Length: 145
Image 1 (cartoon, one colour):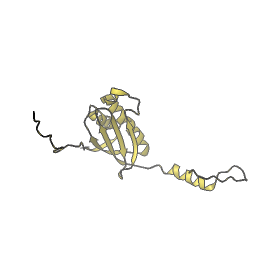
Image 2 (cartoon, helix red, strand yellow; image 1 turned 90 degrees about the vertical axis):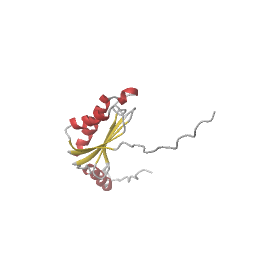
Image 3 (cartoon, helix red, strand yellow; image 1 turned 135 degrees about the horizontal axis):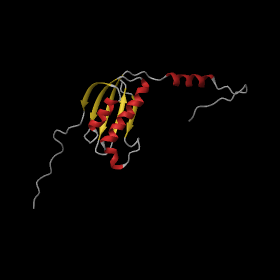
Image 4 (cartoon, one colour; image 1 turned 120 degrees about the vertical axis):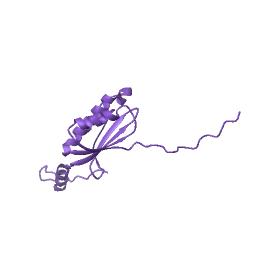
């Protein structure tokens, strides 16, 4: 299950293998310059996640994470704060340039984009990835009375 620890009789120095693992974790901080921000907007919530060029998430945030509850999660104000919070988390990875992909319809759609723009990131492009149904399911048969 967990990592096995070897108890040594010479002092309380940890195992050299454990030191190498911890030093790798400290130096594994990514340096991401170009990223993509995915904004998922619905009538109930707003989610923003920022990824690197490979698609690995480096930061994410949502209105519920910031403490908004109920109908306040779907407001443009909450969407603006979500975008700013996610951008601040991503700036720890030295993020400079960003592409925005917006998906869904809701009240916080433009506010989230304004929040990312106001955080000091260079916006390279804005893309709309909202799914659009082009035929849908079969219509019901006519009613016979």
